[in-house]
Length: 140
Image (cartoon, rainbow, N blue to C red; front, side):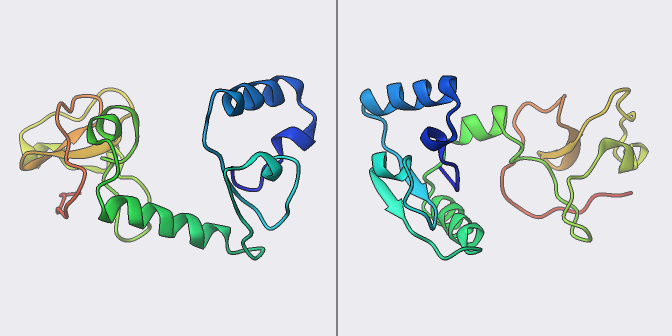
């Protein structure tokens, strides 16, 4: 949980789900400068300084990636991890921005992001085994 007081917010359905998970043994890490009702149920409460929670989350992500504590098949199938990111603005590359004729492929008819598969870009909707890591150059 990041700065979210589920119990104190008073939303009955969320509080019920949260408490059921805790009763069943869920481990809870609360990242918040305030020790609130939700933090009182936490396995670990990390009292960060206000405004530094994003830096802490980035450190968690870096640690997970560096130590390979992720499930690659899950990231490939259900997450946006394989999407190519443009270096100039940090946004995902859209299929409409790629010069598909240079790769001997037609532009996708429907909206798609772009992933890297093998030695060429591919629309995410058609990819079977996209790469998670690496650098590549795409013709626009």
